[in-house]
Amino acid sequence: MSDLELESPSTHLPPEEVETVTIRFAGDSGDGMQVTGSQFTATSAIIGNDISTLPDFPAEIRAPAGSLPGVSGYQLNFSSRDIRTPGDEPNVLVAMNPAALKTNIKDLEPGGILVVNTDEFVAGNLKKAGYATNPLEDGSLAGYRLFKVAITSNTLKALEGSGLPHKQVERCKNFYSLGLMYWLYDRPMEQTIKWIDEKFAVRSKEIAEANKVALKAGFNFADTTELFTSHYHVAKAKIKPGKYRNIMGNEATALGFIAASHVAGRPLFYGSYPITPASDILHELSKHKNFGVRTFQAEDEIAAVGAAIGASYAGQIGITGTSGPGVALKSEFINLAVMTELPLVIINVQRGGPSTGLPTKTEQADLLQCMYGRNGESPVAIVAPATPGDCFNMAIEAVRIATKYMVPTFFLSDGYLANGSEPWEIPAIADLPKISINFRTETEGFFPYSRDEETLSRPWAIPGTPGLEHRIGGIEKQHITGNVNYDPDNHDFMCRLRAEKVERIANDIPPLEVFGQATGKVLVLGWGGTHGAITTAVEQMQEQGHAVSSAHLRYLNPFPKNLGEVLKGFETVIIPELNLGQLSVMVRAKYLVDAVSFTQVKGKPFKVSTLVNKIKEYL
Image (cartoon, rainbow, N blue to C red; front, side):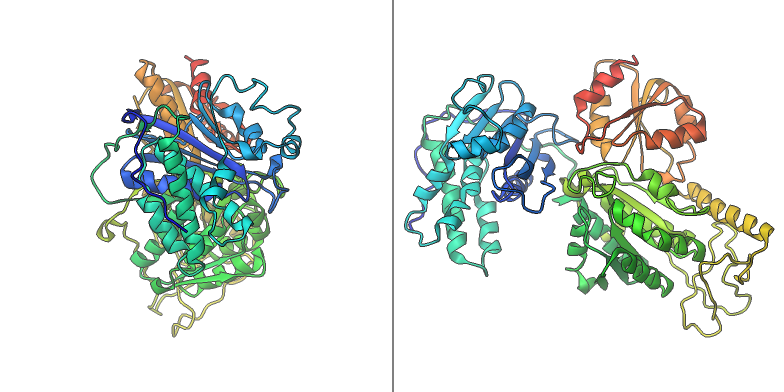
């Protein structure tokens, strides 16, 4: 197979400078769109653009090829300035088949660039996508800059004589489309070529060579054809100096818990059962046994959390991870951790519900489940990261709170954060927060439910420590001694004591920061993955001179101590959530504020424009 030259003479002018571009790659779930998007992302990160991504997976394990439910997408926003979201609507859509076009064209901006793989627009595929006529020929796409490219047949032609099976050759078409976009937006290919060589080094050098040839063929086609009359360049973003890498939320979560284990000086045990979209945390942690990480893929959710509680009891950093359906199954064991007052950390990467719901789509509908979804009075701490990179910070914070206050702590992420990515400044180990764990070793005066005067935490005594033999369990305990106790007054006292312990965490977390003026007409209050869209929308309103501010909660139980004062400073409080108003219920109940609940449950994040329009209603 002959390689393709990269130095083909260009028929075009130098690239035009643009500030921000949003691209969406869309195709069948077997078309490699996630690989294509992630490679474009990695290259843009190396160039120095600020980036934000939104992968979109089909829920079906393998939907029929060419069907609407089987469409896979990957959206990337890259820019020469600071950005916080993957973009409201793509400027560019690469549609590999009619189904991809049908499901995504409504999002493409008017006049946007539309690149389609003409080879797939045949009668059978058009029928599967619900098209009565061919949209490439009926004028329905007149509002876009349409570029019709025979991606599949061009790929097959470039790989003639490769010796690979036809099906394997056809799979290389995603790299051909990536080559097109690399030329169109002035991206180098070296990083992707290196990745291909590493990815297929063991599997097949022939496949690696084919993918590289397809990548270069797409690049050279765009460079030499008269189809594209312009191409574009996005300059390096001006960001704070430091060492950065592109990181996804689930990856940052895993690294954060490893860092917490390191600074705490205790082994990490992760008990989990595979579930979308949390499984990648298990995959990532399993790679790091050299850091003292032990991963356990249990036979079910209940066994996973039980093993994690056992690790916590034994003095390790016990963590269990899941999504909403798994939290439902773990609830009885989580309550055991409440009663035994063990520092269990529960990761909940939220997805659309109820029941199996929308496994691959994002939602924020588990807040009340984590807060109240157990029998009896069972208070737990809850933290929630705001961005993919912030998953690292809040993972460490979850471990710090759990171990200092001897309390089960939820780490409440979501599908948008888990699968999204952004540039992340790699912290120095010396700058990581400190986690000090002091196991009980003194036998004199030891009781399993004696209390620290400041935190109300009970002592953490490792089983097997001479003289510190004790028992804990699910039945109510007598204050101090830990003996089984059914006395009504003692039960009332212990319930209030456990609740007070969680409330005291508020003394140990930072105050809520306000983005903008501390008082004004409108405050937009958010939590979790809504941070980017809310902050961008509020920033736009501020630039127009409006008295609008925002605040973002990363601690949801307890709330920051100054939240009540912050709320009082504004005429209107708007709370956007990807649920039907769960934080709004909590804020209204605690602070008696007539907050405006603004919600959606579409499995997709908020658009900035949607939030801007809502804010304008209250100005």
